[in-house]
Length: 256
Image (cartoon, rainbow, N blue to C red; front, side, top):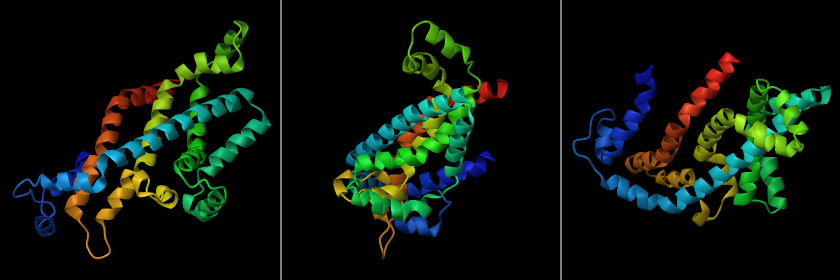
């Protein structure tokens, strides 16, 4: 199973060091010589630092906003425990099965009328598409946190917001990391929504820039694969730092 899942990484890494002729001759073979110029050309074509900056800004702000709003909404829905809160939760869960393509054109038309087709508008739309899954995950995790903690904080003089922010939210750290990993991978790799919203070359994300390696008459696979390696490095680094928290959240959920 490990070999199956690692095989795409092998293909990407091996072919990123080949010339275009070598790549089409044998995809699985090792390169005859390491062509480092592929990375230099891909770096220049991607306008890497500018694209990386915009990808980081959009991804980080979107994930932070999703975590804050989703955790607060899930806390209120879990602690209320009424028919209305159950209905609202079911609406969020049902929204998870609606494909983006079904609402794509009406959404873009509406955002265009509101003059919201820009980076802040993109972040707002990511919030709308990301909260359903995050609320579902947070709601399940909050069931393992005793309501007595909320009541004790209230007795000590905390407001509801203070009780959540200082007592409950720190306990949600394992699930927050899990939600952030899921959303970082989704938003970082997303092409379709940014392609509909971002139309200025100087604000394009890395996936949008990577698309320019594939023209109408030619496809620069060697440069594209080198660019993909540059693209995935930030996500891989983030995952390695966050993986211990993901394991904690999984084991905590299984025990409780």
